[in-house]
Image 1 (cartoon, rainbow, N blue to C red):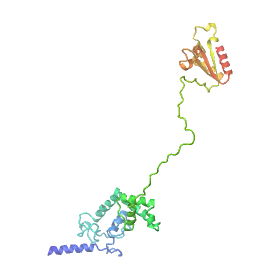
Image 2 (image 1 turned 90 degrees about the vertical axis):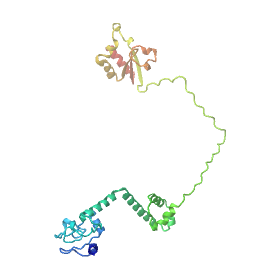
Image 3 (image 1 turned 180 degrees about the horizontal axis):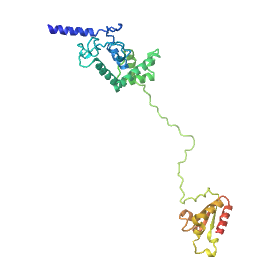
Length: 307
């Protein structure tokens, strides 16, 4: 009998702890329970929760009431010693009410960051956009043939969304709609043009011999100065090319500077390229002058005579 009376008194105490008086203003000696479970959760997530006076507009550090009460039942005892069940989770535990609120809100925050929560928000947003689209149609039969609405309905069906009653009929009609069958177009062969048929294509024959080399367009005028026609008898047998080039190429630079033309030394053992030996006369030691006017070649001859 004593156990039954104690359990009944406990249940009665639980019923009293669940009584919410949201319109009653708290005082220093009277603190009613004013926040239901949903408002406690929302106030904590916003960072404005005071369980000392059950307010959702300030923190417990800023509570205007100096007297501290039990945050679970607002009795005159510590929160850890409260004999009633937790008014937030309706269960008995050893930790304070605020810890219980933190655990639940932490699960809510983790859920909001999870991929299923993001998909759920996307589905709800798609439902809202679909409802806005349908408001622009007076006849819903015409809406079923709208491509944007068909696309949105099919995307929601891929996410296995549960259709509301006002959208279930139009979604079913769109999903059951068969695409129109298009007839295969027959490719018509055009008739041949009038007149004789064209002659078959004959590939041109390539020449057996390679074409002659193209003249160099960079220098309009070129001249070959053969050194054997300018040498004196005393220079035979000496290193003629070194004397004409000069120490460190001084004479070579003088020829190009004063004449304004390019000066190259060519001949057998000098050129080193087969392309410059096409003519038998190219084997003789000579100077190739490449410029724009004949006067440049005369300037090179004059410098060679000075050397």
